[in-house]
Image (tube, rainbow, N blue to C red; front, side, top):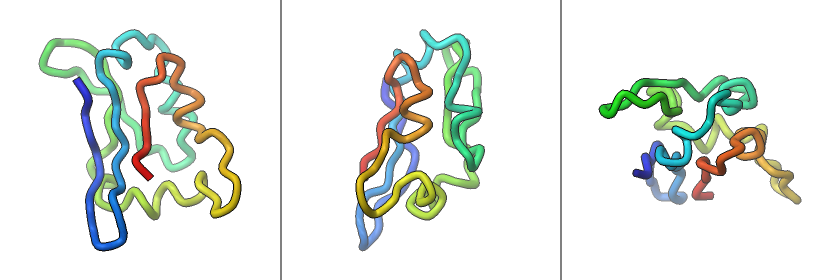
Length: 93
């Protein structure tokens, strides 16, 4: 299952998608430490699996909270995406 966290407004779509089927495979959840804002948390889902999510307080301001990792010019691989060894994290913008 893919869980989408974020919002849509007049300037665009700002979603972080976490593929929970892939996230289950991760034993270390490197995204927790990789995000400089601490936006990720690990929860137990409805199937008793540990998966990452975006904390509620960040979901409506992702564009601004992720800005330090997304320079205007050439973008390096995002820290959260790089730390996610199963490849479960995607950004829509």
